[in-house]
Length: 544
Ligand code: G1P
Ligand code: ZN
Image 1: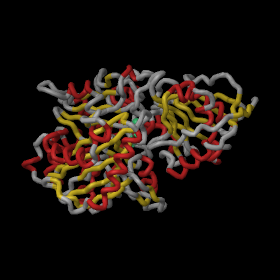
Image 2 (image 1 turned 135 degrees about the horizontal axis):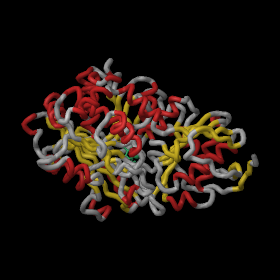
Image 3 (image 1 turned 90 degrees about the vertical axis):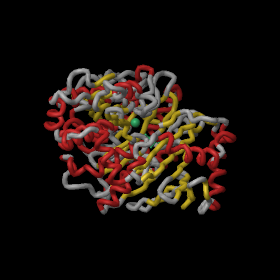
Image 4 (image 1 turned 45 degrees about the horizontal axis):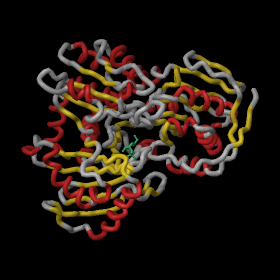
């Protein structure tokens, strides 16, 4: 097998963000762009030489071509075995499962998550380490440093691997093993959840559900598991055919983008349960009959009920949530006498806590929930968790959540996103807020008194690493909060996220409308940050 060394020049924009390197497809298609980044992974991850790596993606436009290029780079860099999902497909949680199950030396996942796909849309790549989780900052930094000095990459000249053919194909000394992308993941779900009970729920004739795969990667997973193994009626999985452009949609499971299931769960003919997952299958949205479960509440409910679920029946060791996620989970942890860790945004920060068994469950307000079963957030897992819980408790989604609020109080929650704003303006806004922080404690805004105001920094309790500038927190006495941060996943300009949380212990007020409860905080948040004056936006792009 001929190995070529191709001369290349560094790009200065290959710094991985919150979840890998994301750019427009056209950027990745440009000469040497993908090759440089992948070679930088091989140059810095010595274990891959002579080792095993997993490879797969969410099936978006350019997925197949990128997989072929990466396989040829892997062969040239001496990887002994590449385990690749059939058709180049692996959902992000399934990739994590495969890395762990086959004890690979890590893996490469191709995805831009919930960002739109297609020739003019987004593409992404990230490296996951041997624990199955997104590479920690030390590793992404090393890869980035390498991209700045790289001068050549190594690639074999070969015809394409048949990605649709299961089994082993040889590329020189490298074995390319094409595996069923669903089987290992389905097996893991079977161990965690009471499939018989969920099957009975489906068979009862009293329960109607839909799962919206949003034409993204979870289609085949949900069809096989929910309709196939668990026996839900055909048609339960909607938009189940994966498409390279996600059918032109925005594969983000939230109230703004997963409109179809919002409609199905609304009104007098509403079905009992609906859920959706994103482009690469790691996010989830949970809906009951006329009822939306905020991701922050979902995590808290899971923590409080984990002992009812097969895979967690001996209890959980602790919980973690990303900083902007509501503090609902903290209250459950408190009641259970467990630790609740507050981490920076991004799943990579949960890895050490999970590996050290300090936590069993973790989640983010951005529709991500997961557990120690893999090292990624997991959309379908969250759906199966809820289904198992509904089957055990024999109550509706709404009853379960309202009961939860009665016990723990309710954390009303809203996020405002200002997308594609001018980068300098967004950075100026954050800088201005930072300059005001020290003067804020004790100040009064309407009924709210500032308790603390800081720029969140995190010290990893396992390896002691420190991550600074992770978002601005303004906490009010009584437990309400405003959080500001700039997105690390966007590909155009800057996205300002404003997270608002209002704590309400009084059960009589739990039926109030979220928008109404949040109104005073919205006003404080927009005025304090001078959002309109600095960004020219009087309204956010998306409210979730
Ligand atoms: C967003 C979410 C974050 C999540 C990440 C990857 O990142 O806010 O919670 O981990 O996507 O799915 P952001 O764009 O805010 O940096
Ligand atoms: Zn995702």
